[in-house]
Length: 196
Image 1 (cartoon, rainbow, N blue to C red):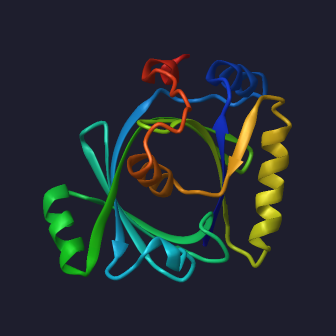
Image 2 (image 1 turned 90 degrees about the vertical axis):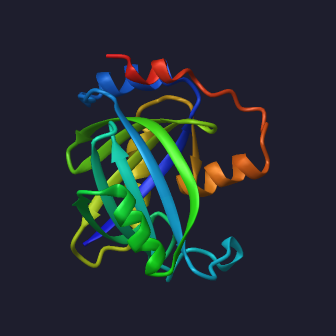
Image 3 (image 1 turned 135 degrees about the horizontal axis):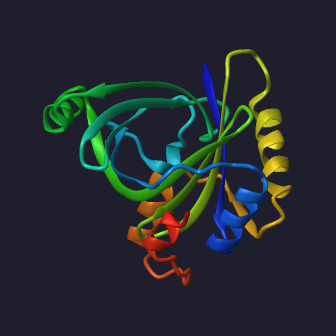
């Protein structure tokens, strides 16, 4: 199984939510996600992500804790993923560090999720970097990842709203904002992400 994504900076969160509603995407209520991303020991951004396995610990609404590994394939938006719920975030953190992973960046966001056929639609407001649309597709065959990403991009463009595609993952975007703050982008208020 591979998970294939496209991601977009959102020009107007309100316009996006209206367009998704018009497209029949029923977004659920907002979930608060607090992630800690880990990189393998010795990894540097200049090495690129494909071929390296990364880990993540996520707490959802302060209760459920989820451990995930992602191994990017052709690009950072196409990867093999393994995921499971864990009982104790702190103990899992210690285990991940003992396995040789290094805490890399914390990502805090509010997420609303819906579906459009086989596409998972996520609307995220990420602290420090703004609002995003993320489209995901899980495939179990040998389809070319770039072709699937092109299909996802065509669906996003069909919404008719201002979107800026990015090939960066949230850990890269948040880390970049921490290293180079003040890129001139204004983030929507978190309350904007909970519109129904």
